[in-house]
Image (cartoon, rainbow, N blue to C red; front, side, top):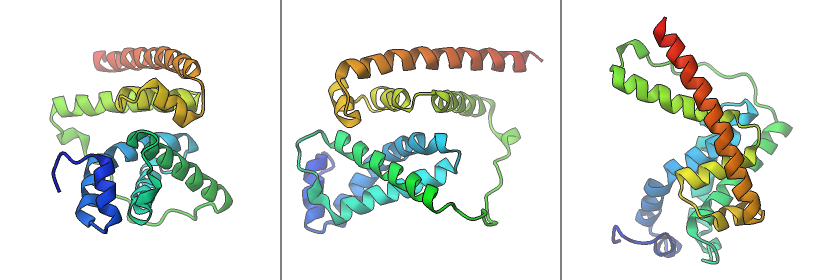
Length: 198
């Protein structure tokens, strides 16, 4: 398997049972799928990290079992994120019908931030601020549009196809999403600056 294999070539290899091709797809795409799934489920108030992990596993399980479902009519990333979006919606619907029982013991304690190097801690805080502001966007389609456009560099036409919306609607979502995100980040940075001045 060549490292420069396209997703379509890797899926063709998966069809013939090549587990290395699936591993290559997983290594390349699972972090993106997980981040996308996390942002999909975050507003639910449930454990977004655990749900994102479950959605990611479901997506790649489907790739293994049904690689022929990708027919090349749309870009691979559009198809993959549509699959992840549908899996996240299905997972949330399932949890609405069957609420989880109380969490069991065994949750890892939070990392001790006092021992982190200052630059690493500041980077983590900035990332937390961006993710928190993305989560706070009231319109989930604005959030989804921004993630796909900014983080995945997905073209407007592909986002419109995924959201089943006209391109101009996606442009409007991106415009308002960026304004709302900027306002939230400015507020967050001002609050962080006040905290450091104390």
